[in-house]
Length: 627
Ligand SMILES: [Zn+2]
Image (cartoon, rainbow, N blue to C red; front, side):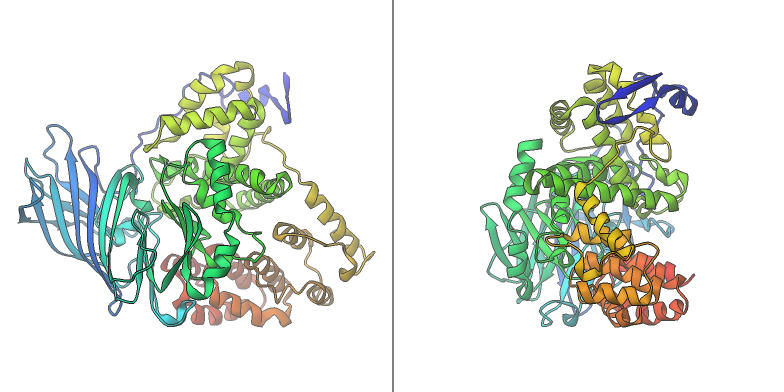
């Protein structure tokens, strides 16, 4: 039986039945899940951290944070269980407990056997009346969540810089805590720095001017540990609107503020679509080029890599993405890393809705089309268990969740719901969902049950065609996944075809007004890789080797390696020794390792570049170059 669906390719219910006997029934039972996070030692069902107060000195000469974390805990009734915290490479000097928050007495503590992914459990016995636990500790210079930059590694070159990256499970390398997205807590902090540096956090009360060497912060809304963030550097602030602004080093601040001048417009668009922004201010930190990610959605203070400053706002969707997390991820959080798509899939979907509203449908369509292309390439290299929205991460690091599947397959699932039920109904559903689960951490099953009760049940005839089990628990894409086309990309392909067929030279092509997405699509379309003469022709016409746009450079340099196009090798080396984003490093080093003579080149470049990379980026490249 075929049931055609508006805008979506028809689905065969027979095929559906063959995969899973219940998959066309909107009421079929969903797989059991425990909701237990396997990437934490903590047992929050027995003792739960409700608030953390930090008091830290940032010691740049030793590259450590040193001080105390005071945790307010809540015990389950009748529990006499100890407090179990996550830690990695922390040295603990003293642990004290208190029943009233003022009088503390020393207690014992014990480290468990270190686990390569999880670090060590830190077990602290609690008395019947223990309400607070104060841990005096210091971090290690190699803490996986901290990057200490020497002055030459910064934009200003005069002062050092520190920034944190707590996601996935690196908060435990700078704070002893219950490091799981399933536990939310409020926090306060005092941070002391060298006098000439500014400290800011994912919290209220970020300073905008005076450098005092001592800063206090407050986050009154409960957040999970992976959203704890701190940056210290030679930072200045520039306001963008009443409630938004940019922190950056001086050499970068003006162009950053210009690039992100639409921040307020995007925030307003998001509020119109999905309800009020709940966090107060929305500020942006422009992180140094070694920042391993495109951005990080730290609440009230998005971190974004300086690589997105393209000069023409063409990479601003990275910022839109982090902003969208203010709804999906930060307000409604995933309970375990297996449910990561609840944050990223929703966020990619919301990001493109904001882009559509602020920059128009054509641009949003390009991003959907590129996303689908990327997803298919990614799934081709992934095992089937990594192609499901709900991931099986047993025996693996939480970092294994970071493929495009949670992002792009998740977004595609939501788009298929939007297309089936219509925008009005789906938007209303999403707003209700964010209200219903606000400031909670939920599992895939909880979402799917909510989806059935609040959307699918309204139109059972459509619900039968949304293959939710296939999306969530099976590899690949359902046969009726949305097809995505971009008219702007079609024009790009026509121009590329003219050149490939020899009907026009590169400089004769009509590329007027192309944005970054179109250039990337153009480069990807050129397969197999053109020969050296053709590469030179492209380079002379479009200046790819000289491009300062990191996304275009990343794409071009892949071709450069595949073709062995020597004139661009100095640029390749320069790119790899200045850009620290993992999304560039992984494909470029992998490609180098496959190229003739590339292994030696990869290792030589890496030897120079490694000190600049973030610890998590080093871990990725270490794996690639040792093969
Ligand atoms: Zn994200």
